[in-house]
Image (cartoon, rainbow, N blue to C red):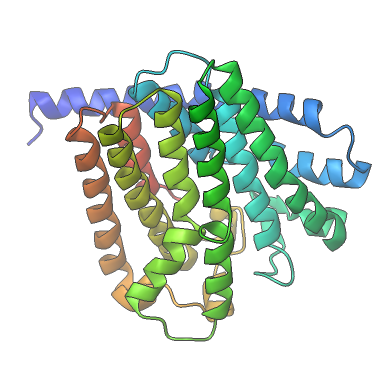
Length: 309
């Protein structure tokens, strides 16, 4: 039975979902501005590869999360450029993840992967160039928001730590090492808290830092980001075995083909989804405890598990 409170909450979540179309447009505009501003000095094929990777279709979950966290924590400026910096790091990770020496995939976001269009050398160089460019973008955005030097430094440091050996790169290496092995749930979660979760966690925290959030709120955003990041990967694993290539916009069944341990293999599809839903409840509870749970942040968390691509 739906109560009046439930109806109000549902309406708020629906309004948040409608607002994300506008948020995505803001992020896409910032990405186009990033390309126009930074890609000129690069070799044309590398610049084209970066532009292709950034301006294709995508959910823009991570940059929208930056904006939602920034606004929830009281940020009043235009956070779109900062959000774009996070998408640049995410796009780099997809370019490299698809390379023949990694997951060797042909499709991403409904079209050929970067190395299939521009070649392995250009794709590799593009990914390498995108990380320092993302750091520059994050710094420029922080300065434009009028943040103090310590906050500017904290933002760049958080983003680079998420993309480095302690985050995405380290997680990718652990993932490659685990192919063909029967991993424990503990080891699987260690891989994915780094490979997938680190940047989602950073996106939430960057929004809080930019808004001047205190330590208790930043810690709540860390817990939220950590839980949402792991839930996102669990949902990805489930979709890999339940969705089609057309639905995903990338090749379905890659985990099985690469002999990777997955959450459905360890817990079953239903068990994996229960684990993901428990993580989302934990994420939302962490923000509610410090007064940060907005409809936008709740919707983003629940979308992570409910999505179909």
